[in-house]
Amino acid sequence: MAPAGTPPEIIRKLSAALRAALGEKDLQAGFSAQSAEVRYATPEQYGSFLKSEQARWAKLIKQAKVKLD
Image 1 (cartoon, rainbow, N blue to C red):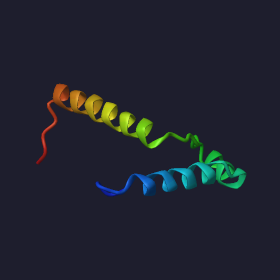
Image 2: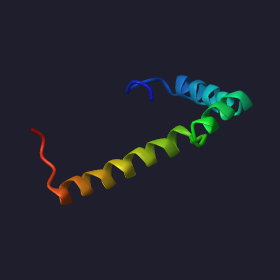
Image 3: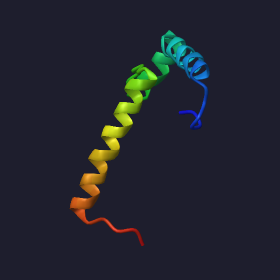
Image 4: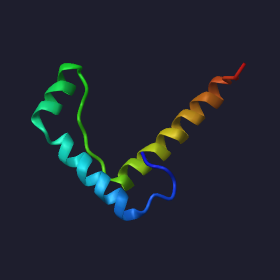
């Protein structure tokens, strides 16, 4: 995640750094020990994922008639 309006070159650098970090065996082992799956996604892929999740959960919340107090 980054603030809206972050320059594309900064997004690319952050994405490359994240990809490199996620490739580290120690980091992978730490996540694995917590039963977490390490999976890299490009900024575009992650944006699409977030949009689909928002739509999915909005639909479920509406169907369940969830209300905020």
